[in-house]
Structure formats: structure tokens, C-alpha cells
Image (cartoon, rainbow, N blue to C red):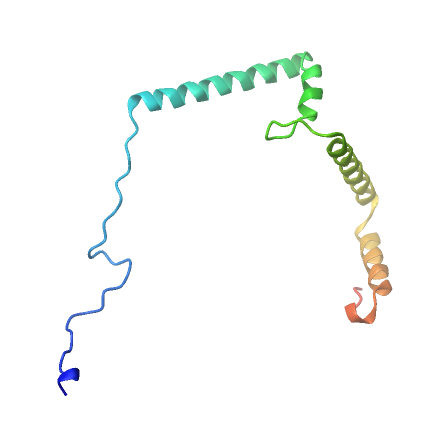
Length: 128
């Protein structure tokens, strides 16, 4: 019976309760770091404003071509990537043109015909 004689007392300690947990202190940034960040933001906003002005005035035509040939991460596109993007753009435009002229009734009819062509495995009830 001596093995079962020990019974610990008190309540269970659960994670997340206020007892015994310490919060991490936030590091305070120095004035120099804040000034550096503010300067970077000011420079980037000035560059963006300058590019907007150039685009409005029409001087940014040559720059637009160079922007199209580079990805968002700054690397240049290969010929295959450029062709792929062009085909994707054309497909999006064609799809938009097709869907712009369709009424809701035409879209439902097209969906029903597509469902009719599927095998019974994919059988869905027709829409009215």
C-alpha cells in the first residue's frame, strides 16, 4: 500500500494560464534605425511618384517594354516564358470576349450540353 500512499495535491497546471509564464519583451528600435526606415520609405515613394509622372507624360514608353520583360522578382523573362505569358494573355482575352456576349440562358445551355457529354460516372442532374 505504500506505493499508493503518495497523492499530490493542488490543481492541474495547464498551458497558457497566467501562472509561471513569462512574456517576451519587445526590442525597442533605436532612433537611427527608425530614421533609416523613414528615409527608405521616402526614397521609394519619390521613385514611384517620378515613374507615375513619366507614364502620364508619355516618356515611359521605353520603360514599359523593359518592365514587361522582367518578372516581379527582378529577373528577366526567357523566350519561352515570354511566349507562355503572351498565350495566357490571349486566352484570357478570348474567354472574356466569349463570356461578355453570353446571356445566363446561354451559359446554362452550354453547361447542360457539357454535362450530357460526360459519362454516367459523373452523372449530375440537369439544370432547368
